[in-house]
Each structure stands twice: as C-alpha cells, then as structure tokens.
Amino acid sequence: MSASAVGHAPAENHERLDVIAVGAHPDDVEIACGGTLAKLVKQGYRVGIIDLTDGEPTPLSPGPEVRLAEAQRAAAALGVHKRILLGLTNRRLFDSFEARVALATEFRKYRPKLVLGFGEKTPLASPDHWQAMQITDAAVFYSRLTKWDDYFAGLPVHTISAHLYYTLAFGNLGLPDAAGHLVVDIHDTIDAKIASIRCYETQFPPTKQYVVERVRAFAMQQGMAAGFAAGELLCSPRTLGTGDLMHFLFGTQPADEPRKPDVR
Image (tube, rainbow, N blue to C red):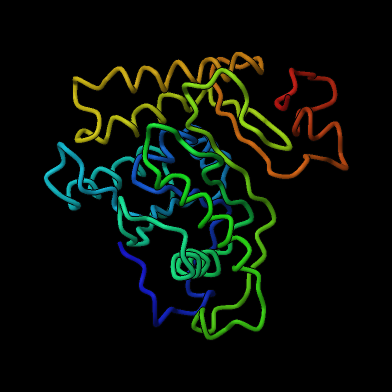
C-alpha cells in the first residue's frame, strides 16, 4: 500500500505502533533485524515496517506486484502488524526534503516510541541504503518539529523516544562506529527471520541460497558474542545509559533467578 502525500487522516485514526523499522527496499529489515521484530511481536509490542521503495526492478522479479506480495508474506512470517510502502523510487532514492516529510508524516501517524533504521554505508551494495539512513535520521527530527503544520496536513507533532541503527555489514569483522552497541537475543525467532527472507523467492532463488545461510551464520556469530545462540546487533548513535541497572541487565527476572546479561 502506498502512502499518500496529501489528505492524511488524523493521527488518532491510525492505531499506534510501538516500533517502526525503516528499510530502503522490501527485504532490508528482514535481513538486518527481522528476528528482533519477531521477538518484539512475541513480547506484545505493536510493530510496523516502512519500505521507502518497492525495490524494483530486479533481475528475476516480473514486477512490483510480485515483490510486494513477497513483502506481505514476509511481514506475516514475522507477525508484524503493519507494512507501509512509501512509494519513493528504487535506484534513484535520494535524501530530499520531500522524502523526509513523507517519512516523518508516517511517524506522526503511527507515533512509534522506537525507530530502527540503517546505520552505515554498504560498499559494493545499493547506495539507496545510505540515502535511507539520512532520510530516516531527518524524519525522526522532522516528526517533532512544531509550527510546521502545513507540511503535515495538520497531523500533530510526535517525539520519537529512541532511534537505533541496524547493520548489514556482514563483510566487516569490526563493530560499526557508534556510541553504543547491543545484541538482541533472537534464539527463539531466528527461524521466523529466515522464513521471512525465504519469502523473497525472486531475490533469493536456489542459486542464491548461500546468502540466506550467510545471514543465519552472522546471527549466530553476533549472538555467541553476547552469550546467545543467535542475535542481532543494534547500534546507538547516543551513549546508552540506565537509571535501573538491574532491570537493564536482567530484565524482569526475579532476583533469585539470575541469568546472563542481555546487553554487552
């Protein structure tokens, strides 16, 4: 479904999402943080995905309709509640004022507490990823700006409480540059993540199944670094802190049931 640039319904007409993950193309967020999204759904949060473009054309896809059908199946595999196509142009995605406003409008509609997005360039891969990072960064800011109603069809301002970056840096042995890093335990959602990626049959035919196995291996590597069977790395542009150290380290586990910290 494509987002319209005009005629928006009031924010209260859109059911609030706790988390929105933004990708340049359908399959970006599944590969980077699909396990985290499925985990959040299992924990009772309302989760959405925004694809800035339809990702087409690509070599083996007959057209956007097929790719979008794959995206909907992938969303169902993860259990996410809402998938939105912003309708910007694949291969010609650029950080522009119009793109920033279009994404910020969706943030104002669905009012997430947390946004996940690209956190770095992807050398030898699509330059759309880097543009998506800049668009998302700006849209998080634009979402909360007052005295700008004319650009947002009267939608109220919304402040996003947290913004984290995901990574596709499978070919890098080091950690991405960031003020803080954490690994989400996805041992119980890694299969949902892989299933969502396999929904993209046009992108990962039998000759490219090695990519899916590479994604699984990367999740195992990231997880093992934090003591989990599988994990996904997220990066914070700001230094991470807490006012409740025990909850930060151990979650809501009873005091007599210590376990390995989830955050490194």
